[in-house]
Length: 126
Image (cartoon, rainbow, N blue to C red; front, side):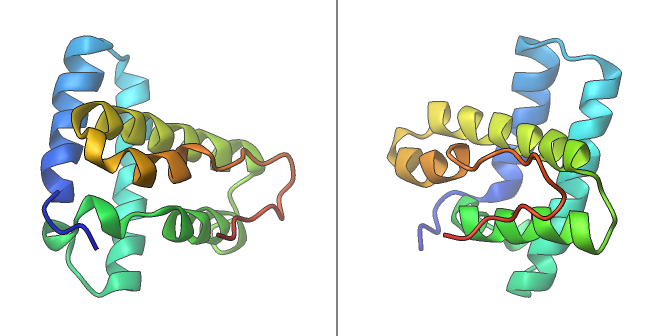
């Protein structure tokens, strides 16, 4: 596992550098992305038994994201549209990470290749 890329650093930079400065994203977009990451970090903490402050980019892989999206649909009752909105936020983050850290391209590429959902029961398996 690549343990030299602390997730909190990249999440903070993504919100401050990418969303706020470069994209000048709307407050609604930022709030939506924030909510996605809040849920994803809680889910990852439960799955890895690591607090968000100790997670690394490698902990958030296509497998855990797929399980997270399924959890959102099945346990939280999110629609396919909500699932796809969450996936879009996650993809945006991984595009940013790939640009910052070319050595993580393969890891990011797996996440970026995840399909959007057209049905409530779609899930990801790696």
